[in-house]
Amino acid sequence: MGRHQTTVSKLEPEIIIQQSALATGEETHFFKKLKPILIEIRKNNKLRGFILKNSTQAIIDLNKPEELTELAVFASQIFNASAKLLRVCSHEQMKSTVLKGSKMTVLCLSIGGNELSIFIDKAVDYERILERFDSVNP
Image (cartoon, rainbow, N blue to C red; front, top):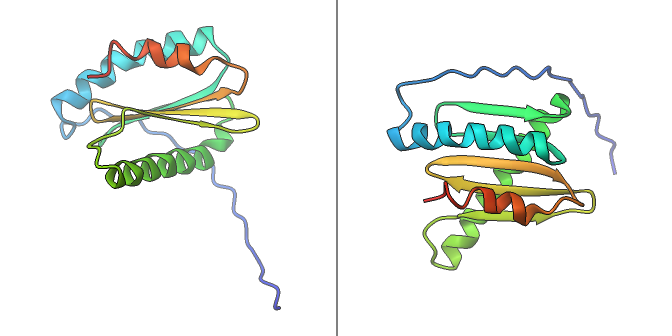
């Protein structure tokens, strides 16, 4: 077999958060409600970080910003796979997905048109974090 050369380029993450008139009123409403909850959870738990996004804006807070691209792609894949599974099972939309790995647990929630991905250490009780969002999730 032939050997393939791989070129690796390190891209510095650039995050621009901008309010846009294109977001739906529901998305913006839940986005504003989620932000203080995430700040509180971030202070009180062993979170590696989170990504909150909707169709026009995002808030990203990660312990290791250099992992932004990898974690964002990973979270997107979880949302896409969950959506496919739900279609197969004839469900309309995802409320939450939990993926437990050997070192990290990823919580993915869909709340009012927003996608929230929370990255936590495996030892953290993710159910307590999920409970915190029950009052916000429609």
